[in-house]
Image (cartoon, rainbow over all chains, first blue to last red; front, side):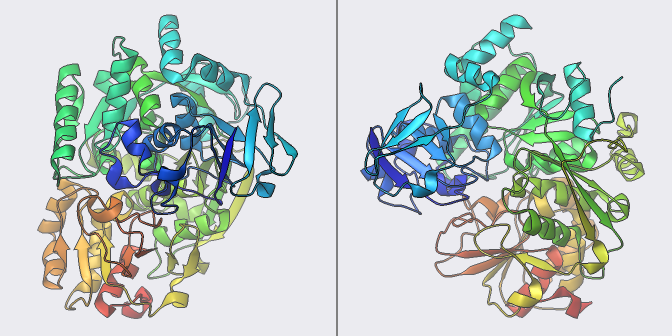
Length: 161
Length: 416
């Protein structure tokens, strides 16, 4: 269970982690600068198990994998958004950051207590006593997620070619 | 009997060896792989993590362009590591000063009908040559480097049909900004844009590259042009005529959406802060004060862009800082020979080494608090050029050049 950090639409990867930090490759160091310009209090305030909640097109812009890496290292349990930009979506799955697609994020408020139940495909909002359905991924993607990311999946692909 | 196909479906069918249609997930063979200094270190880390034989080293090209030359020891160390790695596996390495990844890939390597992936979102630029090219993250690129393959979802396509001729002072940049304005920043997420029509068939390669480059700004996976006689002439110039092949979408191919544009109706456009789809005609923001003008990048740092800028700047003195970055060494040399750079410097401009220059805000041309810049780049996100308290407007090289002369955003048509 964790707290919701609410964001809007079109949150781009420059906002998630600025270009000047691309020189950093250690996840924990990157995590110190997540959302630095947009919500300077995020990096210090985020707790293990919290959720980033956003609208449409989360992660648009630059292909920097530093963005999902920084988010994962910040300790959040998952990003919950209406939709994701394509490259960010692949990157997140590849490095094992959990993404949840959910149409009903508008009703989630900043600071709401959330709990994810992936088995039953729901997000539970404890603060508002509501549950939201989450969208299921295609089987091919679920396979990569089950393997823990693309590196392990790639090794399996290698053995086949 | 396979049905009529889009350009994307044709390329993925060839590269996967199966009859691939929009929506299919395929494992496809990759022809070329590009990486830059910002994203290569993570990709190399993942290649090492995979710890298996590297199959595609010969198809892999590393470029140092984002911070070239390096302003900090940390970046210098990264760049050295990239060079050492490239040499150790037999991959290609392009040092600082050669130019921007996307310009060099087009000048030297990419051919129509190829499948190209790059660890940079603007890899889609190569669609200007009729290649299916798309940006990926470092882990995806690592898998491509190791296996020479990766998985892809064959995208649905939008057809963007553009007829007519461009009015004076209006350029492919104004067209692509208009298209993004219409689609929105996520209007084409996961889709391929396929450009067609009279105004596209007559468009030179520089213009096609500018437009393909910005396909990602409406979320698209690729921005594809047909490969035709314009492409063939370009490949002849580059000494790669043997790599030419004709390629276009079939007549009855399935397009999810068709957008119609009339080039004659277009006018000079700008994208206002802080999103690329925040579009307006230049006439609506005319007079806005700008402190810096930046002409360059993988969007608009080519010879024809520098020609337009120098023609407008000739005999004038700029009222802003004017920073000009040729996209490659070859463009730099050609612009020197043609006198464009002399004109720009005489007008008060400064020339940076070929590379990304101020676009990503990591090594030069960072704006002060409260300043505004009009730039020929592809992104105006908050903080993009290194300062979240500054504003970025995007426009064509012509609009940028005349705004430098006036010290405020201006309409290039008044200078023609």
